[in-house]
Image 1 (cartoon, helix red, strand yellow):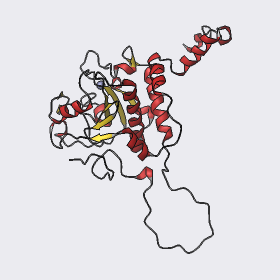
Image 2 (tube, helix red, strand yellow):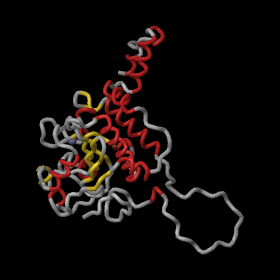
Image 3 (cartoon, protein in one colour):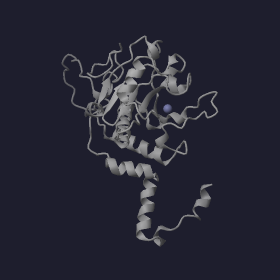
Image 4 (tube, helix red, strand yellow):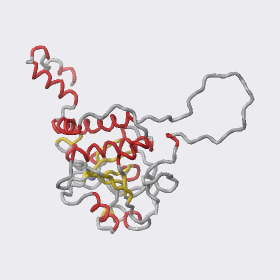
Length: 281
Ligand SMILES: [Zn+2]
């Protein structure tokens, strides 16, 4: 019913200046929580950053569940197509406590009997629990949320800076989008994946980024933060096209250095060549 809107809008020119600027500000996010977090964090810098710099900045520590045990007891490879954002709703446990719990199989549930997800984020660090090319148990049992998405949990324990946690999550998401070629439209809240057999199939998760249990203005603000981090990433995805040059005898082919976009996929462990990645074991 968009057409009726035009009769309801108060012309900006008739509003006092302060009210008009408030209206404009609310057009940008329309989320009071988003505005407050944005003010706390400041704008995302616009200076370019390499994928490696961003990954380093995110501060991912690897503390994997042992392969073959608990949440990784089944061999279940995955090609991630989505990124699913959660919050722990645990007001006492930090990221390290969640890593410990996952490693000793303390969180039961899901299809394989044990919950697991890929990353837990708090204000100053990210802990990786399983490689991004293995499926987790964090969203919708045997549904596409578990079969095709990377699961990220945001911490909510006392003393944790929530704004910084959200921003670190946005940075991690941007980095994962880059390395796994995942579009922003496939970054979703847990809410997105219905859980079969539940009276409330769409979970209110991550609750502090939703409005009345549904994605709204605050979720949009979070996505805009992800997008701004993503836009900073600058790296060639393919060989630059050289201008046509006069034909000359070519030297023997040299091995080409790998370009940023074709590096071994980060975060997956086996085959990943960078420090700080999961070994897959
Ligand atoms: Zn969730």
